[in-house]
Amino acid sequence: KAGVTQTPRYLIKTRGQQVTLSCSPISGHRSVSWYQQTPGQGLQFLFEYFSETQRNKGNFPGRFSGRQFSNSRSEMNVSTLELGDSALYLCASSLLGTGANVLTFGAGSRLTVL
Amino acid sequence: AQSVSQHNHHVILSEAASLELGCNYSYGGTVNLFWYVQYPGQHLQLLLKYFSGDPLVKGIKGFEAEFIKSKFSFNLRKPSVQWSDTAEYFCAVIVGAQKLVFGQGTRLTINP
Image 1 (cartoon, rainbow over the protein chains, first blue to last red):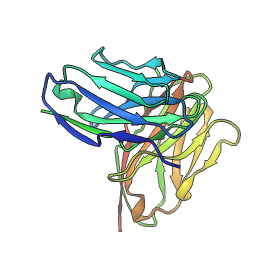
Image 2: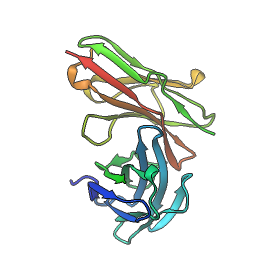
Image 3: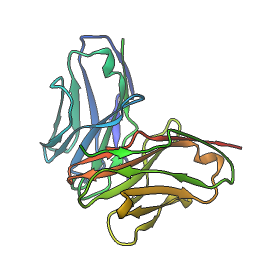
């Protein structure tokens, strides 16, 4: 079966712009989580969605937001981009959520902010 | 705050050497533990997991890990590494059944 699909794979933005990243989970998975990966901070949890509801949120500013649609696809948005937002953004899906199941990760969307 | 520590930031070994990567966590409750691997240019993949039961768990590609509750550790081992094991390895723990907390990662370089 198809894995977790993230689009776009690469993108370049300038400071002050906004960006929307998309994630299609494995078919049948209802939970989608987002992580930010940077060389300095490693992998940090952004948020988790389950059945269109945000279940948990990490310690990121309000510029980072997300949503989940009825088909379990998820988007995350970053507004007013800063240089420090340059990172690999990873999406992971699971059947019922982080506590109950193993997460399967996508290849990521690499964002560069100039 | 809960945290996961991987003390080895970069490990360099020769092929056929034995490997042990350290992982310690600071969480007193019930834990679910994982090792993920990220090969160059590829996405994060699950190596192995511990939920309950036998504290010695076996994963893919000959890797294994031992959960030692008294030491809050979940070290990753492989008796004989190959050049293809060159990758970054991440230890992670589920905290409060809500989110996965990752260690900083250990970069493993295997010289042929």
